[in-house]
Image 1 (tube, rainbow, N blue to C red):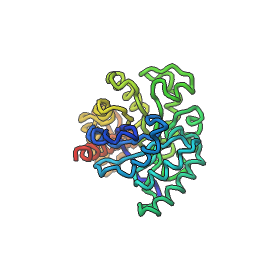
Image 2 (tube, rainbow, N blue to C red; image 1 turned 180 degrees about the vertical axis):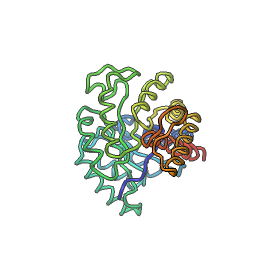
Image 3 (tube, rainbow, N blue to C red; image 1 turned 120 degrees about the vertical axis):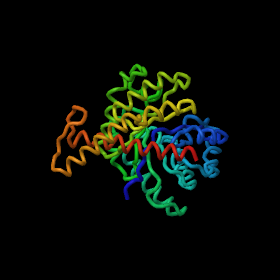
Image 4 (cartoon, one colour; image 1 turned 60 degrees about the vertical axis):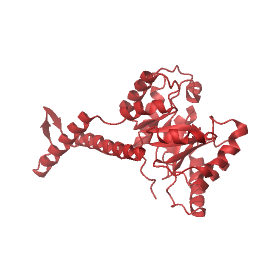
Length: 300
């Protein structure tokens, strides 16, 4: 079974032991919430955070869980708790191993069957946070049909920046190769909406916008936030503008009419339109439609 389509403009992290923040996160306008069991939770609080997954409320947007890294003794306990809670998916911290993701696929199938959840509905989102993860991204995104997206860890002073030894800037020069490689691997595997991960300086919204625009230009479909103030910026950057939508709709309509008349190459506004141009226009329209649906869910 193929993984469910996962088309999100924005996700927002909340610490797993701070369920008092859930309502604010849901109302932030984000398309999904990630309950973090890893870095945001002190070791002494991790068992409580894991147990609290059973109390996640019904909400109009999906919940994901970021697990602790697979090489820790906490990982499989996190998986079981998340599976029991029936969350939409798991964000696998410090993902590096295709074999671990294949094992996770099997574990999730068993959990879905045990807790009467639709088999195959729980998705996997590997979070790329190391040089080894970047290198293995090609094999990880192909390791399981459950892999529905991939998250690129772009955070300032984050694990990937430290591992690569690059200089971080909002313009993304130091991370350009790694960010592009993960995007290429995801798109080659048919993942249409890879996500750029967190921007740490939540007060600097202009720098956030710069990084969002870079990620969008490279081909990423959305970004992860750590504060509600970031979500409107992220959503705006990753939602096609009215002008883009109108222009793309005109291209598609005129090209489809031309095809019906036996033509596959026409001019629209003085520019060539062929199959490739029409395909790009259809992608813009699809993303606009998905963004509209996500906005409707977050307004409920």
